[in-house]
Structure formats: C-alpha cells, structure tokens
Length: 116
Picture 1 (cartoon, rainbow, N blue to C red):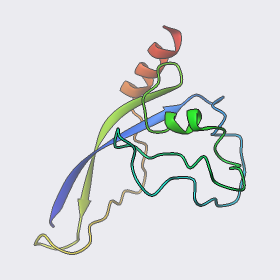
Picture 2 (picture 1 turned 180 degrees about the horizontal axis):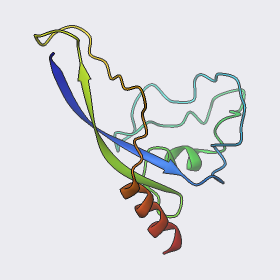
Picture 3 (picture 1 turned 135 degrees about the vertical axis):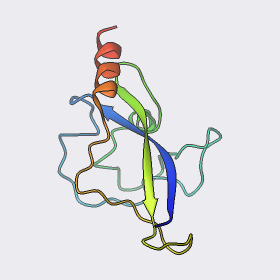
Picture 4 (picture 1 turned 120 degrees about the horizontal axis):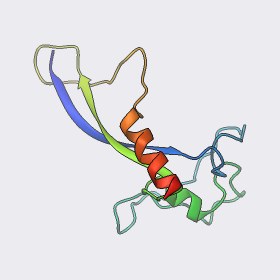
C-alpha cells in the first residue's frame, strides 16, 4: 500500500478556554478569510455577520493556530495516509479506530506551562 507521511501539529486547550468545551452551537460558516495571513496561518473574519457563537474574539481564534503558554499545549505527531493501492496515486486517507494524538509528553508540557 502506498503511504504518505505528514507531520501535524496538535494543540490541547485548558477546559476554561472561552471557545471550547462549553458551547453547543449550530454549524457556522464564514469564520475564516479565504487567504492566509502573513504568518501563513488562518485569519479570523472579524467582519462576519452575524457575530460568531463559536469564537469569542480574534485573539481567542488566533490561539487555535499558535502555541500560547498557559493557554494551550502543542506537540507534533506523524500521520500515515494511505491510498489502499500498491502504487502512489489517487486519494489518500487517514484511518484509525481510535485517535488520541495528545500523548503523555504533551500532557507533561501542558502541566509545566500551566504551573510556570
């Protein structure tokens, strides 16, 4: 089977972050501008109307894509994508029965950043 390996950055946030864990909202679209910012990261659409029920502010949105000590912990993981074929081509997918990318190492980083 043909495999492509990607490195992905994952982040875990404190339970009291205003954008996570406490909201039950319908699907929202238009939260992100169609171009990346100068730092190659997504840009929050501040002009969106109506106001977002998911994102508290541009500042909290920016934390989704940036490591912020005391707010989130980040680590890099390896993702193996396969196409189900012997030769490279077609569509690749990631499939695992369980997916828990935040390991003990990330948890240790999170605890260290929280208390320091």
